[in-house]
Structure formats: structure tokens, C-alpha cells
Image (cartoon, rainbow, N blue to C red; front, side, top):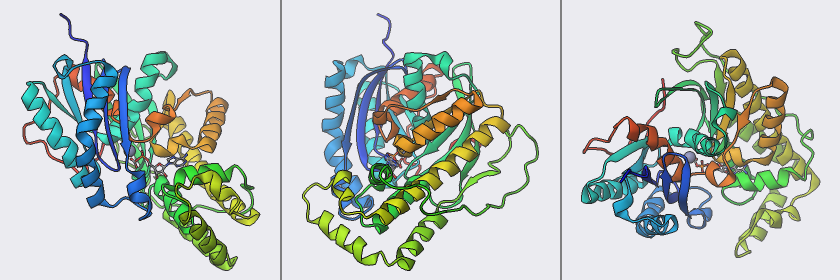
Length: 383
Ligand code: KG4
Ligand code: ZN
């Protein structure tokens, strides 16, 4: 019998334990995600030791549920794919150790996947299922999450994918800025969805934020396809400090503390609960912060797409869930006459379907992991 091209993907790089079964890199048969948000929320950030412990508790039930949802048995699988890095070493190791044991016990190949490549394949997976021709290559991929802000020129040669890292953040990731600003304004964790919701109620022109020009080496040739990461640099630590300074110069400390306490007294506070706790000035600050970050991402992404001759733009990672980002990127893409694609909201944040999808070309190329596969906390993608 022909194989169905079934890959079990396992993802445990940060604070979501996820397992998914994907057929031939495009048909999602299941995608189970156990989120640890409740565990880390009270600390306002991911606590690595707690993350590892939660992954240990969740990994077996999550994998079982992913097989049950897909209606397949272990014996039906063609390969096991797991996130190798980047991420928290202890968290990654839980997925890797389990995947290695499973692959060994089943006698199936094991495929190591870079988490960043996974985020790009979150878009490609759904595009392949819809209309592959809608996002021609090379594509300029923006991966924008809590840990990463990267631009990749993405190309396919035969079955294999190639990435050239043409842009990156020099300090905080964009999602990190959302999380830190939300925290300093007394909002919940992770901050992105809170700011996303509240920004829609404020005036984005209320506070004029600007980004400092980041110095970089002049670019040697125009293609950048084989060159080092270069002039498309981001920096998001300054705007976080600017927001903090604004709260101090406008004496917002007392209202921030009151908001924090009010939300802490609720059993399961949601962004909607914070609306009544924010005055117009705070909502304007939030809307202006989001507008500034989204516009900086938008400007550099489209400049890179144009200058590097990309035929489409792909946006993925947790911040790609942001509603204003989607609206403004979509409008800019229309102005440039360049197709753009985002993952569905479920595939924007960390998930294992993207890991199984990214593994499919490697399966075809028989690019299997070595027996000594281990966690690569600082793994990079592309040159
Ligand atoms: O991709 P992801 O789940 O994990 C990482 O690989 O980092 O991204 C999580 C990040 C967090 O910083 C979170 O605040 C942000 O994505 N995020 C958002 C939104 N939803 C999640 N940021 C802005 N707007 C959103 N709607
Ligand atoms: Zn991620």
C-alpha cells in the first residue's frame, strides 16, 4: 500500500506543548495545543523550569489526542518530526527525547525541524491546501513572534527550501515589546492580545513615537540572496522605554497600579475586562504604540520585498495574529501589487502542524536526524 505521507509533528520549544498529524505537508488531520499561559501568567513571562515541567505532564496526552483526532495509529505514521530549536533548552529536550524514543520504538525516521522554518511553513501549509500559485516565489517571509523578528528571502529548489536571512531585530523581538509594554501598563500576559484589543479603542495619533535609525554596514550587492543579514534591521527596546517614560511624565503610575490590582482580583481576566479600567489617555498610548510597531514592521518588510525582488510576502509568528498588522499589511500589499498571506489565527502562534509541514520536504529528501540529535537553543535559520 502507498504511504499516506503522514508525519507526526511535535513542538515544545517555549510555552505550548503541541502535536499534530499532517499528510504530505498540506492536509492537517489534527493539531492539538496545550497552552501554559495560565501557569506563566502570574509571573508575567515564561518561567523555563515550569515550562519543562508542564511539557513533561502534557506531552503524552497531547500526542495521544493528536493521533485520536486524526484517526490514525502509531503504525500508520511515516515519520516523526520534532522542533530542534531555537527555544528553551529544557523545554525543547522534552519533545526531542520523546520523539527520539518514539521513532526508535516504532522503527520510523526522525526529522529535526527549525522552529523558525516551522513558522514559515505555517503559511505555506495553508497556502498549499488552498492555492499554491497565490503566493509565488521567492517570497519575503516576516517571522514575528515573542522570541523572533526576522526577514527571510524564501525560495524552493526542487523539493528543498532555502532561506536567506536578510533582516532581524538587534535587541527585543516585536512580540517581546508587546509583552513588556502590556506588563508595564498593568495588563495581562501575554500582552499581544490585550494590546490588540485595547488599541482598537484608542487614537493611534495620540503619542508620536519614532524609531531611531539603526546603523548597519552598507550593502554590497543588491540581491542579498547570498549576502549576510544586513540593512533591514529592527529595534524594539527603545519604544518600550519611551512608553515607560510617557507613563512617568504623565503620572499614570497610580492608574496602572489600580488596573493591575483590579485585574489580579478577577479569576480569569480577559482583555475586554481591561477596557473599563483604561482612560482615554492610556488607550491613546496603547494605540500609538501598536501603530508605531506595526508601521515599522510594514515599512521594512515591503522595502525588503521590493528591493530584493520578492514575488510575495508571507507573515507568520504570534504577532501575525495582530488585527491592525493584518489590515495595514494587506493594504500595503495591494498598493504594491504583491500577494500576501498570513496563517489562520490557530497557526500564527506556536503549534506542531507547522513542524510536521516543514518536515515533509525533508522526508522526501530523506534528510533524517542523527541519533545524537539534541536541543539547539540558539539555532538560526538561513545565512
Ligand atoms: O509564535 P509565538 O506563539 O511564540 C514564539 O515563538 O515566541 O508568539 C507569541 C508572541 C507573544 O509575544 C504574544 O504577545 C504575541 O505573540 N501575540 C500577539 C498577538 N497574539 C499573540 N502580538 C500582537 N497581537 C496579537 N494579537
Ligand atoms: Zn514561535
